[in-house]
Image (cartoon, rainbow, N blue to C red):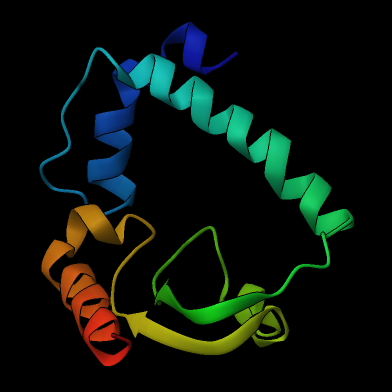
Length: 118
């Protein structure tokens, strides 16, 4: 409801003030994107947290962990290895929106991981 009420207009200022995203700007797609993002969380986060599917991946997995993330705490990653064959945890000194604030560091982490797992 808050996305429909105008959060899309306030979102760039929020990102600049609280999330260190210096070049955040308004997009006409933001309202719809925000609404879809909320739907993804509703559909996946709480139901999977309460009743996780017992599936294990067999390929190498990397999780990039922004150390300054105000929303996702490192404890969420503590037991991920039980779901993977091989798990790499890569920390970055960045906030939640690391792809926007530290794109080079995120790209480097992905590139190095892919190169190590041909």
